[in-house]
Amino acid sequence: MTGLEFQDCFIDTLELIGNDAFLIDSDDAGSFANLYKFVEQYALENQLLNTSIALPLVRAMMSRVSVELPDEFKDASEYAADFRHCLSVTRMLINLNIPLSEQEADILFASALCHILPENIPYTKADNRLTNEYHLHPEIHHIIMLLFHKGELSDTEQKRYYGRIQNHRLALLIALADRGNLMGQLYGISSWNARRYIYETRNCYFPMCIYAKEHYTELLSPINVLTEKMRCLIEVAEILLSRYEARETELVQEILSLKEENAKIKGLIQKHQAEKEERQISEQE
Image (cartoon, rainbow, N blue to C red; front, side, top):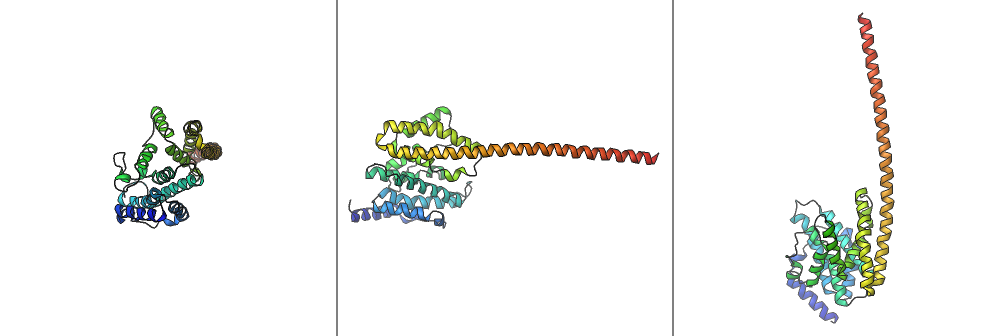
């Protein structure tokens, strides 16, 4: 496809979708302007039609959701943070220079941009508005539904969930990049979440890395990079967890000390009250 052909196709697709789909209800660009520009420029320069469309589309959908669903738990800043996360995952995948065909790369990056949608807007497997209304490649809808799960998973469900992901190499790449992009979220999380991150990474994501190295040898280099990113994050999580546990021990000791001090003070008050009552009795006599 020539540059002019791509431009014509891009414009025609935008017209098919309609301007309303790209309306933005909040001025959110400040938190991710550089990331957005990087992905936008890369997509246009490389004539990635799905990525070029998904970028403004997802931004608009995420900016409107806090207005359309005012009773949801998130506010506009949290939706903007989720979109920034999608941009960061996409940039990470772009920078890995993964050996894929042009179409596969386009589907990968567009899916990375869209993968947060089912968690933030009413979107089901049967919905498929990305294909039916927004003319994105059908595989994008398939990938984001592979990546999405709602609520806690049982051991059996978890095995099936990660099994489906590792059997689809583009979904696998997004899952690993998503996991490797959680550095900012590790600070300030609870000790329970830190333990959960460590457990899931070791027991679910590292096995997928091993599977990928065995079955997708052409992806060995990017898989190694993503594996190392997760390994570094685990080290950070373990440091944070040790700090939590040390502080927890300190707090327990402080509480015990306060209880002892409180007991002493209570004893002194009772003693003082008893002495006061004895004096009053003596004075009456």
